[in-house]
Amino acid sequence: MNEARAKNVIMLAAAISAAGIFALALGSKDAGGIIVLAGWALFIVSIHFYGRAGSS
Image (tube, rainbow, N blue to C red; front, side, top):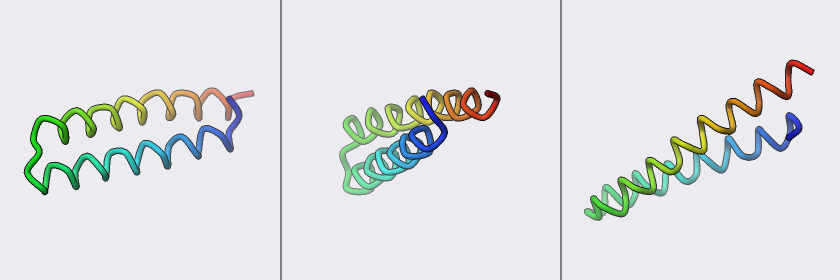
């Protein structure tokens, strides 16, 4: 994964997390929590790939 693609995935993770927080605000605790956790997991993976792309 190159640096530009990793940045795009970081932005996708932010959008997923924001959608989960929006769902939580609307009262859907189960679905919102799962969506937020998925966004955070994607953050971890994408930040790892971003760091690996910068070292080469």
